[in-house]
Length: 499
Image 1 (cartoon, rainbow, N blue to C red):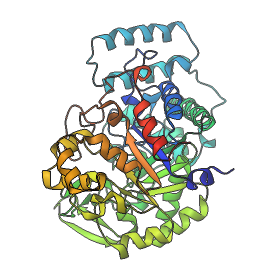
Image 2: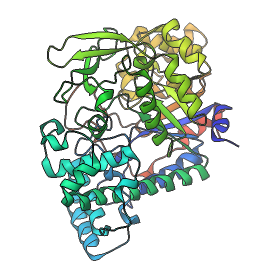
Image 3: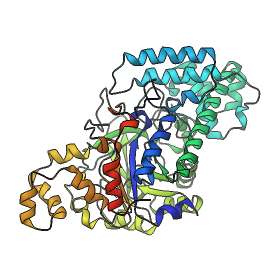
Image 4: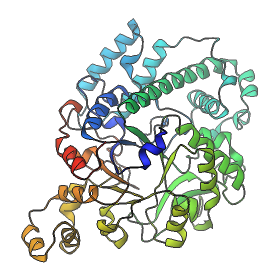
C-alpha cells in the first residue's frame, strides 16, 4: 500500500524531535547528534503508537547551528554522522577517545556544536581515500555545486562575493582545470555526502519497518552565502557583485514574533516563475528521498505574497506570490509526497484557507497562538490540519500553560469540562497535559507533541530573531533509554491515534 494512503486514511500521532542533536544516549559518548541514536528513539516511538517523526532540516550549515541557514538544501550535515557505523582504524579510534574526553568536560545540557562538527568531519577524513571511482562531474548538478562551493570555502574563506572573479560563477570544469588541487577536497566532500545519504536512507528504511514515517522541513529560501545562490544567481534578487539586493523577512504586525528580518536571499518568483518553480520542485524532490512528508516553511510567501527588504535601506515591500501555480506542479510531479503548509501568521479564507483546501494541503493549528480564535478553540480545528502542542520556535506547552492569563485559560478549561462549576473547581488543578489530551482528541488529522513536552524539558529550544548561546543547541536532560512514553502512549490509544 502506498505510504501516502497509509498516512492519509487515519488520525495519527506525530512526535516532533526537532533534531537528533537533542538526543542523549548511553551509547553515544561523543556529545550528541548521531543518526544511530534515532534507531532507539524510533523503537520507543513506534511502541507508544506514533506514526510520524518530525525533524527540522538536515542540510549542512557549517558551524552555524541553525538548520535553516544551510550551505545547500541538497546536502547532508556531517554533524549527524553515525560515527560507530564507520569502519574502524587506528586514527579514528584515537579521534573517538579524544572526543569522549573532551565531551566529559563540556556542559551536559547543550552541545558543543563546533567541537562536534569538526570531530565528525575529521572522523570522515580517516576513512576516505582519494579514489578515481569518484567522478565529480557525474554527480547531480546541485550536489556538485555544494561540494565545489564548500571546497572553495575551505580554501578561500570569506563570502563567495569576495572570491577572485574566476570563482564567481559555478563553472566546475573551468574551476577544476585551473585549480587541480581542489579535486581531492571535492572528492572528499562528495564521499561524505555518499556516507551520510546512505545512513539517512538506512534509517528511513528501518523507521518504515516500524511503521513510523519521516517528516522534514523545507526552508523557503537559502542564505546569500550559499552554494544555492552561488550556483543559481539568476533566480535571486542580487546586485551586480552578487550581494543581495533584497532579503527575506516578514512585516506582519500581528505576527506572534513581530516584524522580522530573516536575511535570506529571495527567489524572483515574479520575474522567473517557471524557473523558480522548477528549482523549488528539484529541492523538494531531493528531500523526498528520505522524507514521506515535507513541511513547507513560511507557506504564506508561496500562496499569498512575499516580502522584499532592501538590503541597504531596510525598507520593505510586498509582491504577489505564486499561489496555485506552485502547488499544482508540486503535487503533479511528487504525487507520493504529503505536503504540510506552515501557514501561521495570517488569517484569510480567500488567500490562505481556500488555496490550501483546493490542493488538499493541511495547515497548522496550535493552542499556543491563543490570541486568535482560529487557534484558541481546539474543538473547532478542521479535520485536515496539523494540531501541535509546541514546536522548535515555541516554549514547551507546560511553560505556555503556566504563563497563560486566567481569562484565556478559561477558554481552554471550558473545552475540557462540561460546566462552569467544573471550570471553577478545576481552575487551579488542570495542567498542560489536559491541553495535550484536548489536542489529541481533536478532529485534526495529525496531532503533534514534542519530545521536550513529553519529558517536561521547559527550556526554550529556539527564540526566533534572538541571538543567544543556546538556540538550536539544547540536549535532552534524559537519556533516550530512560524516557517514559507510557503517558503519551495512553493518550494516543484513548484518542484513537494508535497505529
